[in-house]
Length: 119
Image (cartoon, helix red, strand yellow):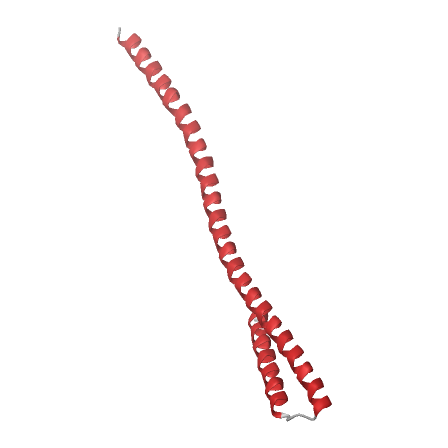
């Protein structure tokens, strides 16, 4: 009986190891692949959030530059009209100088914004 008992004990032990080892390996490999996929998705979400944040900031700068360009175009148009009217009527030069200074200030503001983008 002792040999039969040892045989049954050994068989039970080997079957128990196989029964537990196979599902644990499958569960472990599945867990590993799910973990990696979740990690990649989390990193992609972080990159997407950063990209969206940068896109918003860039769009604000583009809108500001667009506004500055429109202001500059308006001032140039007004100055041109003033100069043409001044030539015809021999008017005082001070308003024209003020308009030209305004254009220079607006151009400097635009240049500063473009330098921010370049750096």
